[in-house]
Length: 176
Image 1 (cartoon, helix red, strand yellow):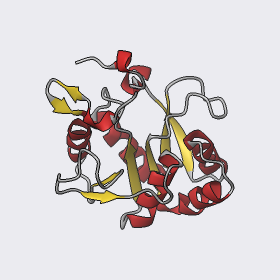
Image 2: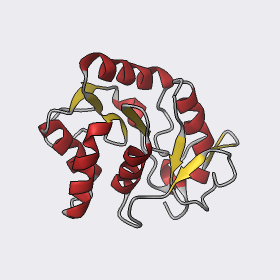
Image 3: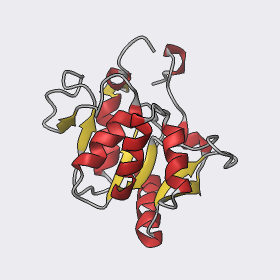
C-alpha cells in the first residue's frame, strides 16, 4: 500500500475509526487495537496492544490480543476490510457461543488454507497455545494458524458472502 492502511479515509473518516465503530456496534465487553503505539489511533483513548513480536505480521497481533483478553472469545477485525458489517460479526459471535467453537469465515470453497478469512474471525482463548506454537515454529501465516486451530477442533468455518471481505492492499483498491 505504501502507507498505513488504518489512516486511509472513506468519506472523510479514517478506516481505523470506521472499523472501531463496526466493532462497537457488536457490543463488546472489551475493545482494543492491535498495532503500533504511534499509529494514527495513538490518541484515540482506546487501549493499544503492541504485537507479541515485532515485524512478523498479523499473527503477532492476534497473539497479543489472546494474551490480553479477559473474555472467552476474541473477535478479530482487520482494518482493511471496509465492507464488513456489525450484523455479520454478531452472527459469528452468536455461532461461536452456541457451538462452543471459534468461527473463521470462508468466503469460497473451504479447501485447506484457501478461502479462509482468519483476520475477521472469532477465536476462543484456548487457541493461544496454538498461536504461540505457530510463532515459535516460524509458521506466521494467519491462514495456517486458523487451519491449525480447526485441526485442533477449536475453530470451524462458517460460509460468508465474499463481498464482505473486499480487501484493500494497493492504492488502486481504495474507493470512497
